Every structure is written in C-alpha cells, then in structure tokens.
Image 1 (tube, one colour):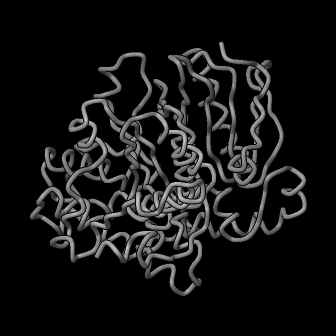
Image 2 (cartoon, rainbow, N blue to C red):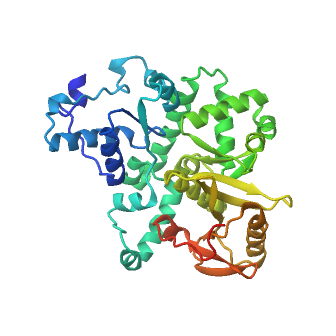
Image 3 (cartoon, rainbow, N blue to C red):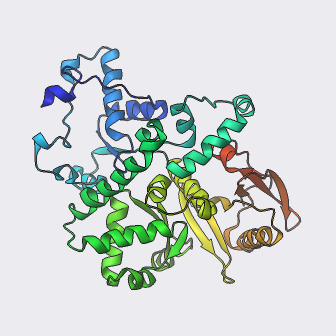
Length: 382
C-alpha cells in the first residue's frame, strides 16, 4: 500500500506547480514545528505536499527518508476514516506546536497559469486582455478546483457534483454523525442558492425545516469543513459582531453552479463570492457593514485594529440607480468606519468617482483586481 503512494515506490503522477504555496510550505517546514495544511477537500493539499517532498528530494534528501500515507485509500481503513480531525482539532491536540498553512482552490492568477496563460505583468494583461476576460467567465462559472481547471468541459459538472457529495457526506455527515442527511443537503443547497447574502439562522430554519440549534450546528460544521465561509457584520463591539447575522459564501463558485443554480442570473453575487474568497486567500480580516438606514457595504477589510479598505462589488454600476445605491452606502460608511480608501469592483468599468467632494472612489474591473492591479485611491486611511 505504501509503495503505491511514495516517491521511493511506484508513485509518478504529474501535477502542475503552485509556486506561491511551495514557498510558504518550504518556509514553514524549516520552523521546527508540525506543519498543518488545511483547506477544503480537493483544493490541492495532498498534491502540494507531494510536490514539496519532490523538492526536498531534488535538494538532496534521500527519497527513502520521505513518507506519504494516503488515508483516502480504503486499504488503510473504512470509508470516511480520513476525516477524523479538521485543522482546529489538530490545533487542540498539538497545543501550539504547529504552523497552519491554509490552502485554497486556485486563485484567478493560478487558474490562468493552469490554462497556459502567464499574466505576470500589465504588459501581459494588455496583450492577452480578451482571453483573460473569456477565462474569467469560465473561472466564475466552474470555479478554481485544480483538477476541474484541467479536465475537458464535458467532465467539469460531473466532477464538481462528486466534490459536492464528497464534502457533504464524508466531511460533514459522516464526520459529525448526522442522521438528518436530507435536511443537511437541503441546508447546503439553500446556502448555495443564497450566496453573498445575509442569512439569519432564525430565518433559515423555517424553509429548511430544522431547529435553530441544528441550523447553527450544521453551519458550524460547514465552516469547519471549509465548505462555506460565514462573514460577520463589522462592529467595534465584539458582542454585536457575534449577535448579528452573517453573510454566506461558498468555498468555490463551481460547486454552486454545478448544482443547477443559474450562473448568468446571479452574476453580481457570484462576483462578490469570488472577491470574498480572494480577500480571505490574501489573509485579510473581512466583514460586511450595514448602516442604520440599512445601506450595506459588501466588505470591510481590517488589519491591525484598523479599517484598511472598504469594497463594494457591482457588476454594472453604469445604471444611475445602482451607482447611487453603492455610493450612498460608501458615504454612510465614512463617518462610521473612518476609512478613505474605497473601491468598487465591477464587471468592466474603470476609473474614479468623487465622494463627498474629497474622497476618490476607485472603480476597477474584477479581472484586473484579481490579478493584483489595485493601487490605493487617494484619501488614505484615517
């Protein structure tokens, strides 16, 4: 069994490199602590670890000094036994003697690389602009799971459906011994249908047919499995953060679209989901915010106890009513959040608008923001 999965045995599966993660893992491995690689199932964790071992071997470590145990192999135990613990449980067991390296499905830049397009500089972006925009639509629809990015178009939906079932059954239902499998599935699909929206558990329980306690528990299990991200409303009061309902985002938009929800009809919410995932991937502390007038800011980006940026996501801000709504929410946030760096991430529009006669709000297309072309608007952070 071990022979099949190890570099000193019969393992010879080719894979696409993810240099950013390889650098993080190599650095973490030198710290003298246990390295815990965490993330949603099929996000690329095992492949990255094998790539790291190959790097060690190339640098002179004997292959016989490396070991891979694939707990997904049924020869190692009963089905589902690989999901014994999630990263938070490892943290308790290891009592601080470990370093976490979170791994996510592909970023858009990585996705382009997997599809054979390097976009390392603005010159590359200008040269390949039309193809980048085309691939962005594919990324929004099919997501960023590494294998999904590489298989033929006809296989993507089937593969994503299998990922949904594996996460739901192996990482949630079996792991937490949930008997109400139909309602667990219903809750997951309810969240998929309502990504990028505020979902109070007390309201969710009615259509799903679960108690409030069950909705809260099941949602917590989804978060542990990396299936969904739940974003809190920003408040300077921690108690208010805990009491207010959260916004829900799925770990990969391909999961949502593969389960039959229309991609084109909800493009704005799919875009917002992708922005949330990218902010989390970049290591930011992320919240949403709502004013007393119920005007909502999609993302409040915090670091070091300060608000670093306020972000709205809007597919088409050219409609006057839509633009007015987005700008009104930003205006309300000025006094409450004390942040002068504001962005609106769009489908295509690029430029600036003045807010309150003094703050420049930057409008940037989603593809360009995802590739990292995000210079700060003037106005600063107060």
